[in-house]
Length: 261
Image (cartoon, rainbow, N blue to C red; front, side, top):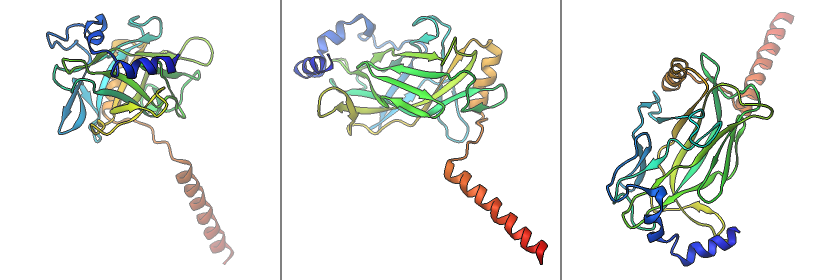
């Protein structure tokens, strides 16, 4: 099916612009109206950027955008918000913009963010080309790069992708979760069944998507401000941890030598 779609994709000049403009999913393009709550995509100095975040992280300056798995916009434990929107004329007609998943899944334990979960939770994103991108506590699996959308004749993009929280058994644990994304210019790969990073625009800075899954407004705001204040538990890399253990071993050996002397 992907090969068939790829053929149609190419023959229609990377989606039919007229169909894109007529699609109800891309409403209000002619009025250049940005959908409230969406992530605003912009291009500045040849680099993709994101605007509209109410919060940003101290130190990194990364934008923080919010979503709610209980808003039922995409069904139980799913949401299609926040969406992605841009003003008319932001892009050239036919520009293709994608996303790249970064890092791993983090959860809020009430006092800090940690990359451990209680019930094997994973967070998935479905791209516009049918990509399946999955964050777990150990990293990203599936399609790390996926399609966001393509600019039509008005030079803008407005898309809502589906995010979902799930668990290894039963229902996902109530809490707050965040993942990291960045936007990038993409091109069809050599086989026409997927996308690879392109070069037209420089990639955006990474940004965070934080999702509420059943917390009260106050509890979620605490988690949000925890991310804003960079309350993230340090997780040593295996090599760093090995060096740490080696250092402890050396200290113990030196101490024994002193005692024997």
